[in-house]
Each structure stands twice: as structure tokens, then as C-alpha cells.
Length: 271
Length: 156
Image (tube, rainbow over all chains, first blue to last red):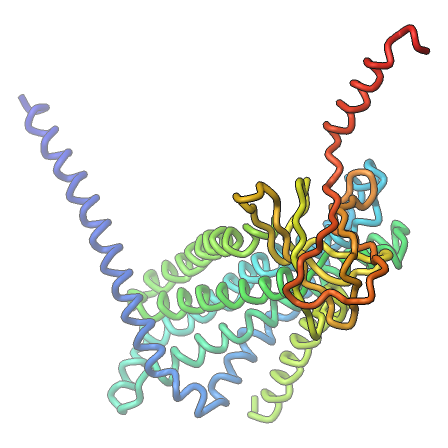
């Protein structure tokens, strides 16, 4: 008897929580869209008072340089070693340059740089804005008739968007150098063939340029997620920590999903 | 940190980033070689293009003189129509011969141009009349086998 009463209750409870999850997710998506429009509307100030944006480029771009370049170097060196191991079986070790450059410029450069950027700069942007909200600094700005979106959020967003393509290009460039270091300097692949085959296969418009476009799109996605999660954080210590977590998780998912979509657009004809 | 130092570091960062893009464009990619300043387009019809792809190089005497910019099928003549974008610096006679060749044994396919002896030159919109299709390995093998079979055992 008791069992019969409990089952419908459990069922409706599950349905109710499912409905709640879906509605609140939709609500947050709508809020994020409205937030993006507000952000774009108030972006003028971050370019008129350029030093606000430059400060953010320093914090999210310049300070990520070291991790980006070191990771790029190591990824390039690993690609050089693994690629050589496979290619020399087919007697085409000279194609190592092509392999390293294409995989970095098309995929690894933009994607890995964006993942690193999300965890290095995105999380700190979320933490900063979330903490400002928790300590009621954003509200205080509003009181003083300073728009917090124009003063705090937009410069951080544009700082991230502008830094990302440069960081991805640096990642690819150091990666190619890492591949060169392992392939040519240590293993002894022919220097001329390494570069000339690379140049023959890497096209500026199709490969390099689409990599830059990709990293620009990733920059928009990561920066938007970072500032939104911070701005929308529950103003408690726990709330800020959970929004930092969801910045990293959502950025990673957004980067990988967008990468799939962009790749299928860009390389469908060329492949 | 004061504004001047900040500007300095951001300036360094931007310069490094632009240098990286230039490095990718010039040293890794082939921006300097791939973009022909002036181009003209000619069409060539082939009975079979094999594995030719859009963006494949067009070579004459081994030098890249253009790219294949479009491939489609002509349902009237049942031929493959390729549009070749050629470098404006190079001109070829009207009776130039277009062949589909393969780089190496299993390499990519490209269009080779063998210049003829005509006085008139190809201009934009012209069609190359004389073409030779791609060599399809299966056809070659079956031809060879039929030849062998028709020779018969007694003729050897």
C-alpha cells in the first residue's frame, strides 16, 4: 500500500526536477543572450577608454604567454617525435614538416591554446568579476552611475577576444619550431625538405587563415562564458567557486563543439 | 603598475603575436608563392579526371603556373569540366595540350600543360581543345591482361 503511494510521488518528483532543469537552462541561455547584447551595446567605452582594454590584454594575454609558448613547444616536439616514428616506416620522413605544421595550424594551435586560455585567463576573469559581485562592488558602481558592464565586463571581454588569435598564432609558431628542433636538429631530417614540403602543402588562405578565424571564434566563446559566469555568479564563496568550475567546463565543451562545426564548414571542400 | 609599463608589455605581446602570424604566413605557409597577382581562367574538358581535386596545381615544365579552381560534370557531353586559373604572367598557345598527371607513383594528381606551336595565345574564357584523361590504374591493368590473353600461349 505504501509502495503504491510512493511510486507516483517519485515519478512526479523526477518529472518536476527534469522540467525545472530544462526551464532554468533555457532561462539562463536567454539571459546570456540578453547579456551579450547589453555587452555589445556598452562596448563603446572599452574602445574610447582604451587603457581599460589594454590593461585586460596585459592580464589575460601577456600573462598567458609563458604557458602558451611552453605548451606549444612541447606539443610541437611530441608531434615531431611521434610523426617521425610513423612516417619513417613509409620512407617519407621529409613529410614531417607538413604533418607538424598542418596539425598545429589547423587544429591543435587554436584548440589547445583556447583550452589553456580558458583555464588560465577565463577562470581568473570569472573569479575577479564574481568576487566583485560578492563584495558588492558592482552594485556600488551602479550606485555611482557607473555602468558595471561598460566599466568592468566589456573591457575583459574584448581583452580576451583580441588576445586569443595572437596567442593561438604564437602557439602554432612555437609548435612548428619545436617540431623543427626535434625533427631537423635532433633526428636529422633534411632541413630543406622539411621547410619546402611544409610550404608546398600549407596554404595561407585555407590553413593559416582558417586557424586564425577559429581562434577568434573561440576567443569570443571563452571570453563570453567567463564574463557571464562571473557576472551571474551566486554572490557567496561557494557560488563563485562553482561558477569558476563551470567556466572551465563550459568553455572546454564550447571550444570542442565549435571546433567540430567550424572544421566541417572550412575543410569540407578542401579534403 | 603604471600605464606606460602596461602599454610597453602589451605592445611587446601584440608585436610577438603579429610576428607569429607573419611567420606562419611566410615561412610555414606559401603566401608569397600561392597568390598570383593577376589571373585568367580557361576551361578544359576531360573524359575522366581520376582523382583530381579542386586547388590541385597546374604545372608546365614542372613549374606551378596555376590552380584548378572548379570541377563539374557536363551532363550534355558526359565529360568533366575543369576551370583552370592561370597566372597572368604566363601565356600559352591556343593548341596547348592539357594532361592529368600524377606526382610520383601514388602522389597527388595535377594538370600538366604542354605548350603547342600556335601563334595565337589562350585568353580568358577559352577552352583547351586537346586533353588527355587521367590514367586509371584498373583500366591499365585490365588492358595489359587482355593483351596478354589475346597473345595466347602459342605465340610466345
